[in-house]
Image 1 (cartoon, helix red, strand yellow):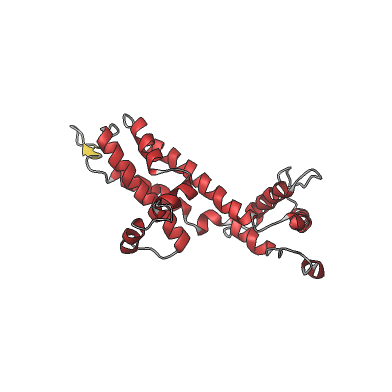
Image 2 (tube, rainbow, N blue to C red):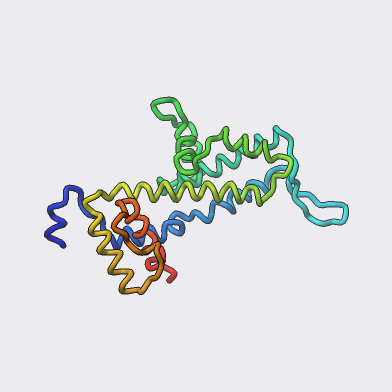
Length: 218
């Protein structure tokens, strides 16, 4: 295979390395830290936490339009900080304040571009979501919102990895998958290559196998 790989127009990615990257993407990017960060923003928002007449600590769920707008801005900043940190790997509050002032050649703030690219939402989208839910804004609503964002983020990262492959790699991927499935005795159609599978279909099954065999905690 090594001789054949030397004749490829596009170098074959390291299949073992990419499999490890795919399988551990969420852990490596610390995506699970995002929800606690967003919920912390909610809990610390002025007036959210209060003590009722019986002395029980509770959380407010109804907000004014102005409050929902302000909370959306704070959550947006938290998302931006998270995604910028994951992309550039070196970020602190001072650097982030500088980053917030940076714009692309079209005049769009880079912070907004990062959140849109990774989470699929704009500041306007968040303000609308918070406004629409301001009569019952709670951790469940926020959890659903963040879950959708994480799915979008994972899809974007996976798409960038998929872009490293081309049609000429399909046979190598297929061979790799078939060997891993046979050696590990994985069962299921999500791992079995069909003749009708295109490159994207084969890559999806490659990712499925990787998720089962290359998680570091296994």
